[in-house]
Image 1 (cartoon, rainbow, N blue to C red):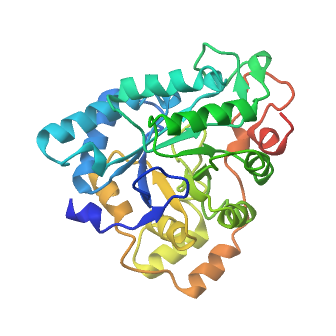
Image 2 (cartoon, rainbow, N blue to C red):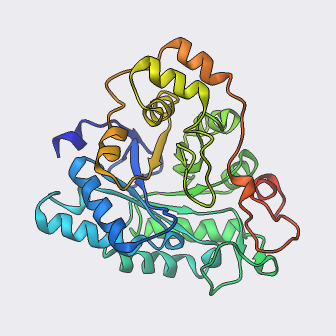
Length: 324
C-alpha cells in the first residue's frame, strides 16, 4: 500500500468528492483475452501498487476486474474499495440517451461495485442498440446525439453512479462542440498517445480547458490486432533507453509523465508491472526530449477499421474529425 501511496496523482476537474486520479493505470484491453489470466494480472498489479484500473464492456474484462477487486479486499491487499480508481466506458451501442444509465448500472453489476470513479464515452459515435461488437457493420453506424448522451452522462454523475465523467477518442473539434453545451465538462479525454503519436495540438487544447489527457497504447499495443511493434522497435527510443540504463517502455512512460499526461498500460507479467511503475525517481534529459521530438509521427489506429465493410467514415481517422 505504501508503494501505491507514493505514486503521483492528477487532480480532475468536475470530480465529485475526492479529486485525484493515479497517473499510472493498468489497461485491460487484451488480445487474445483470457478471463483467468486477466484476474490474476489485476491481483498482481494491486500487490505491486497499481490503484487505477481501466476497463470497458467491449474488452470483456469487467468481470475479471471485479472479481480481482473482491479478492484483493478479502485478502486485505487493500483496506477498502475507495483506495482504487476504476474507469469504465460507454460502448457505441449504448450511446443513446435512454441507454446510458442502464449501461453504467450493468457495468457496476458486473464489476460488483457501487460506483465508478470515471465513466467515459468510448467513441464519438453511436450504433444501433443491442449488439456489443467491434468492428461494427457500416449500416449500423449512427451519428451521436451529443447533447442528449452527454446530459445522460451528467445524470450518471449527479446520481452518484460515477464520480467523474469524460470521453475517449475525441478530437479538438468534438471537444469544442461538447464544451459549448456541457453543464459538467469532461474531466478526461483518453486517446492514443506515445512518442510516435504525440498529440501536441490536442494536449494543448485539453490543458487550456482543464481536461486531463490519458494515453492508451503508450507502448504501441504490440501483439494485438490493432497494435504494432513500431514504438518498441524505434531506434531513437532504443538508443535513449540503452544510454540511460532503462527499458524502452520506461522511456516511453517517463516521457508521457513529463508531458503532464496520465496513462494506462497493460502487462500480465509481474516484472513488467513493476518495471512500468519504476519511472518516477529519474528524469529524461533535454537531449532525450529533443531526440523524441524529432521522431516522425505515425498513428496506429487508422489501420483498424471501425466498421466491417467499406463505406463512409470507415476508418478511425475519418471518424476523428469527420462530421458523423
